[in-house]
Length: 232
Image (cartoon, rainbow, N blue to C red; front, top):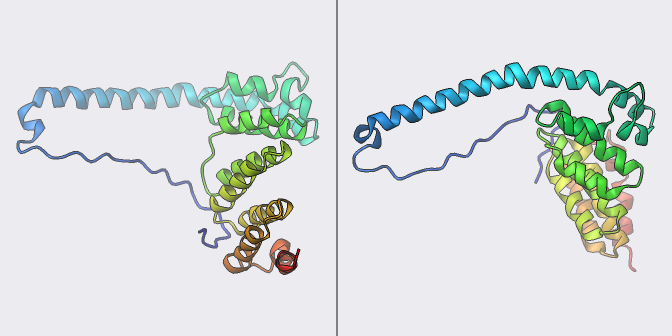
């Protein structure tokens, strides 16, 4: 269950460490040369990654940011088809940019833009494809990713998947406005499917877990609860 929080937090990256059983005689005492080779190899890999990040990824990302401005302009004008493939002025659209600058933060962002453009132009399979390519992290972006996937599946009338993604979107954030928004969508789609019990559960969670009178959807949740409780 998400805890109430109104401010964004920094991304926390969690690294999984696999535990191994310690032998009676420490491995590094029995095989000092092998250990040195391994440590040396790790140092080379780390050094190589830092060089790659600073000398390749950084400049490539800056290049991508410069290359995508025209597509962003068309996106801002709701010219989604142009933003996708041909924003004009000899610039690439988000589809080309996402592939050309794959592996950079800007290229990753182009996947998000491409997904939204496809969603807005009715290409729901395209929206799903690009949103699945989008690497979301932090306190808000995973929720937005799941929410867009929910919208795309809802438009395809694949309501079971849409419900699943709306639930994931609500659980993926601690930001009140986003959690409430996707819980409302979850409730309304359950109502549409005739599952008033599940709808009521989503609405009551809004009321119970995210009490924020500044948000219109929270202030209106009483009427949703009343409607879900009404006899068929």
